[in-house]
Length: 68
Figure 1 (cartoon, rainbow, N blue to C red):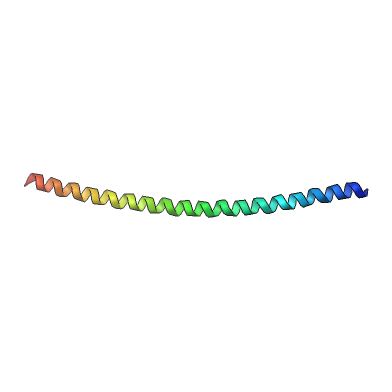
Figure 2: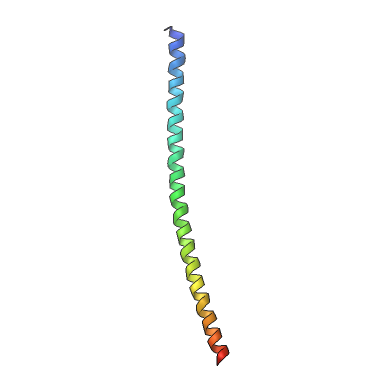
């Protein structure tokens, strides 16, 4: 293998290694964001459930007052 071809191949391998490292970092960031979004979604669902229960309680009290 000529020196030029070997150098070109070596540069391509180095580029692939760099791309792999970049993609690995990006993947880690995406996974961290996914975990954050799941946590936020759970919190929003819990808040929605609490608001629904409070609203149902208020409506029940209004119905009771109306029937009195």
